[in-house]
Length: 297
Length: 276
Image (cartoon, rainbow over all chains, first blue to last red; front, side):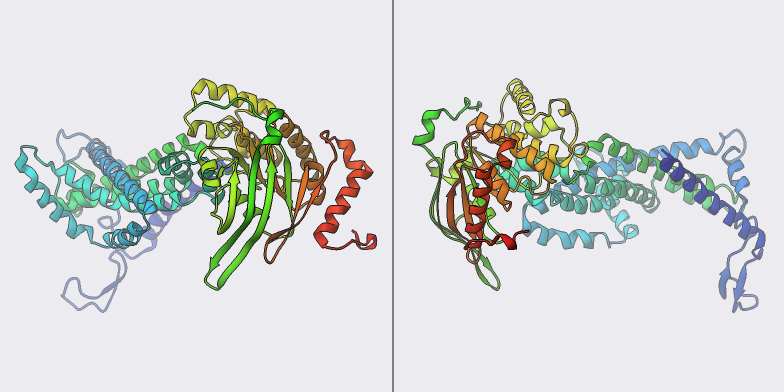
């Protein structure tokens, strides 16, 4: 329990350290930044070594906090945190769908690669290469393919494109984690299953899958983080409305007149990541019996 | 599939062979050349008989056990388990097996681990529950039935492994240094337990060990093996009777057998002065 308390304390200290660093630099740093090699009368020339600290570039933390409770765009509009939460939930839902697709695809690929050595040789390089394709370029392409699937009378919604792109990032750690996990059982356990004349499927379900859980959980957590990231980037790239990514871009565009506003959706995106990671942690708690280490004699 | 009736009726003992090996050989192919793990092994184990395989590392005792278990294929010679091929005997679940590591599934309770072979072979839920309770009783772990392996000592884990090996009432029990990783006290206790269990179930046992006292205490016959190439050099009949009690460990007859096995292992009479 004290260990748990200590880890919570360190977490809080870490966040506090970032906050203190922000305010300290804002207090000490030059208001217009420090630029070397600037040419007179030519904006944007030179190399900026120290960023600007004026209120437009770096709003105070309390301004960011207060902005959440001020109306979104003046008049009767609700306080900023309301649309932030709505947008975050929208993105969370899409990311969750992407995570589920990614986990399903990743598990199937992992199982196939474990079963057939040839499949591992054939698939694994492509799976690794797939992660080097820039998402920004890939997302609009996928969206336009999606919009062409409209014909069968079943329209392809824009959010589904976003979810598919999120799954594209999420499947990777799962495929690798499942492959590793399925190969985790001891020689001993495999011999034992053989003495029981247990076939491939019985061995898969009774031994390999349960034994893979300790490898699978970190992969699922990575997949959750990747799915959130993928969903936010894909929203921006495709131009889907309603999510946190789009909101972030929109408010960032108005930052010169309302510098604290983009921090609202930024905090929303952070909360989103935490919720996603927390949900996987809950899953891990449900599977805790599969994470027991057998004490050796 | 249902469980067999308790086996080991006295009439079976003389008529049926649990294991019959004739000129059995095993060669492992390596990049650097073939390694002869076993050669010219002739061995019979009668139903209900307790036979130990003893010898230094590399003498092929574990290899022989793995051949009987059909975990590895033999390269040459004949091998029958209850009159069938080792392969068929494995498919028919004619033996139970225990290794040096208990090899329990850490995510299953004691009951779940004992239950594993029964569950895999599609035995009905009620029958399984009854059998698991019976086996837990046999190895004295009834009150730990819902514990997980990491909550048990090494000796208790090994007892679960033995219960699991006995789950389907095999007529043959294969054991590969099952007490090798345990402390001496636990080891002696489990040896006594094993002789009791073997007598109660009437199963034949092939027991791999590198402990001379252990082999003598447990066995009807001790098979002495030698490395390079792995082969049987001697087979000693122990004849200490059926009652293997703690008192036996102190008896002169016991020490006599221990000396005999030691001499067989070293290939010549051992001088007392050299003994540790």
